[in-house]
Image (cartoon, rainbow, N blue to C red):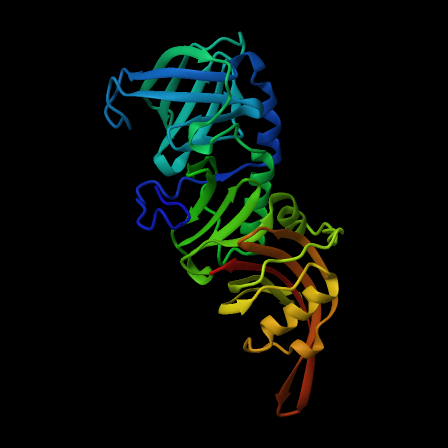
Length: 345
């Protein structure tokens, strides 16, 4: 299963990397029909396997049902079920199956049937509830706000379809090492969330995870909501040599273009005072191709985070570019929305 390439896991199995999730608001609303009495951890065994079943008879697995219709099973997080009669149904087209859990009418677990996408019975999980815990093992805790993640992914696909092309409607995210993520095989790019932080990787973003920002702030950016500036107090930043990754978008004439720029060796900002960070933005981008740092203005800094080995913040600002043409110079207004991640070397 593919996931963000981190320092401990560079070679990843792509067997079901395209297990994806996109939920409409109508489907999300139906998830409230799953009674709270079904929430908890279940120990299940697969049986009655038919031709084409994804598992062999006797396969044991744990399943967690959490609030809002979220399910952790194997290395998947399922969300946004539809309810039909006594069953809650999660669609997983990338694996060619559906999971139908009953009984949502009585509020007591009966079974979890595995069906093909054309509703052919492939087998079923049976077993018992072992606890009321909703902790998902691979996530190291209760699943995050999946409706926010769904909305974020949907907006990213809508606005940046060339990087994150939408595929079949699905009810599942993949999970590994605490990440909830989606992989796009045609562009080899990833969107993932861990500890309420959004990351991208692959394709134009490179082979290492690039921090985009917090889940709430990134969602606000994608939906056109304001993101607040930094709050005092000012924090001093440890001195040293840092590697800097700048990532985000550059917008002009209503068109947004992905932007990534890396510097292998650079001092970190002196502190988190607004003027100091503005100066560091200019210094970091003064050698970037096609960027005129002298025209930067209207700065807004947010999402500042400082630790012993990492400095992160988001910078939004305006600029102008001048292009020489056969009819003379043309000046264009440009809007930058970038994250700056300094990692101490």
